[in-house]
Length: 237
Length: 130
Image 1 (cartoon, each protein chain N blue to C red):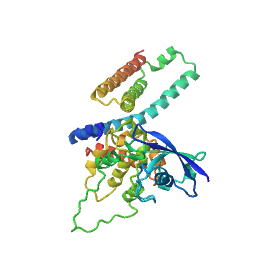
Image 2 (image 1 turned 60 degrees about the horizontal axis):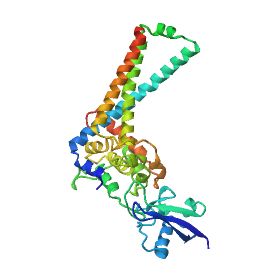
Image 3 (image 1 turned 180 degrees about the vertical axis):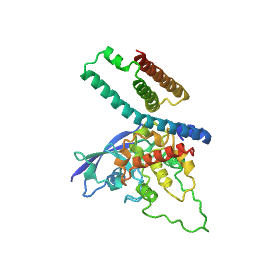
Image 4 (image 1 turned 60 degrees about the vertical axis):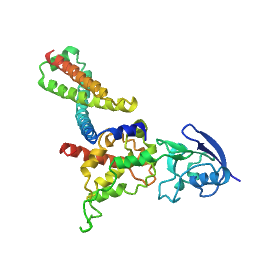
């Protein structure tokens, strides 16, 4: 039987790689490989997944040094010499094995005011937003984020500055900046400005290159820079 | 919660707002000065290439710059753009590479900006007065 050599990170931040051999199968995903190890070789292996179909964003890991969603990553695409290395996501604290603590990642969404601030009541009519309006088109470009953390793990600026809000949180803020119903625009722009916000982005574009949903957070962050600069110019920041 | 997150949570909303304003204006200043520099560097390079191709001596160059208000105005603008642009970029480098984020950094960077401006103006004035 054709066996795949798999090197998997075990333990916490001071852990180590351990080697396993997993039967190679057709159309096998990296998540299939991790699941095989846990169910057939070592049940103590910890990892996170939920939907298995690229919707939930739970199964992101570092595969051969690159952050990926493992449920939609075929082994055939990433294996080199019939071997792969699997590690937890970078830039996040390791809880155990392939599980990272995502608290800081999602706290930053809140810090970037990534929640919708409604202004209408149930007595008001539905807001009408034309699907081809510039704001709706801009929001559409970033709205499909599944919160997997791949962009955050791939961002150099996050690794340099632990306070940096990161591509996902800033992308979320940009979709709301373009939500014409939202009533917290001023507070949001103030929240995403500064050396922990959009101005720290170096436009390396790693986030957009690695995003499994083909979102380009760098473009969203550039939009935030323009919006924040305009607000500062008008004295509204 | 990480130390950085605690530091952030401890900061007041007003302080964060002031920080956002300050950082945004620094960003605008760096982009605006970059636009000025793009033009100034081209003119400066063209001047150097002209001087070299025409084998102009130091004395010949001084003869052209002495009393030349246009040259003085150009190099004053050039120096101003450098004094704004370079320190802001260096500040970002110090923050990201050295982790230097305290208020002392702003004072050092401010002193550097002033030094670049003063020494640059001095050089510009020297070739103007001759």
